[in-house]
Each structure stands twice: as structure tokens, then as C-alpha cells.
Length: 104
Image 1: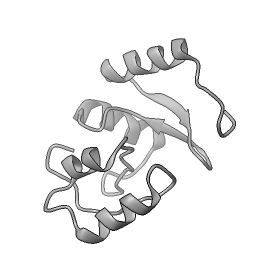
Image 2: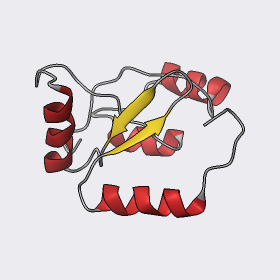
Image 3: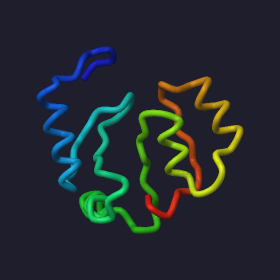
Image 4: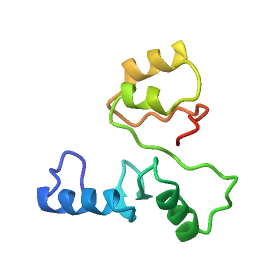
């Protein structure tokens, strides 16, 4: 999908249903295609590791829709630096590397 192009609502609905049922979906990002699952489902995350042949100690990216959602995924207090970066660059292609919450 090209930048600025609208996603097909029917396709999005199917992707959401797959994610909710613990299945994997492929999706475009700004630079590559990603393989995604529900980050809060151990079983679904295990499927990503298996599909990629990725070692268990090699962490995955968690895509979020907002700074508030990102804060829920972090193990400790949301760093002030992360807040400044999120305000300056989100929405947009910014990755933050932070310790995860135990439920992720």
C-alpha cells in the first residue's frame, strides 16, 4: 500500500478478526512488511517466533496506536524522554526501545 492510500475496510475487518483469534497477519509499514499478532497473547506471539524462526531471546517490536497505549506496555514509569519523542514524532515512524511490562 502506498503512503496516504486508504485501507480497504473489509480487509481491515478480516485482519482484526484474525488477530483476535490468535492468528497472524502481514501488514505494510513505512519500509517493509511486518508479520503481526496480538502482543498480549503468549500463544499468538509464539506463532510469530515460530514463523520467523526467531530465537526466543530476540525481542519483537510492538506496534501501538498512541503514547497512552505505549505507556501500558512499559514495565516501569514512562520516561520523560519517551514522552518528548512521542509528542514530537508520533504519529510517524519512531521506534522506542523500552523495557516491557510482564503481560507483553
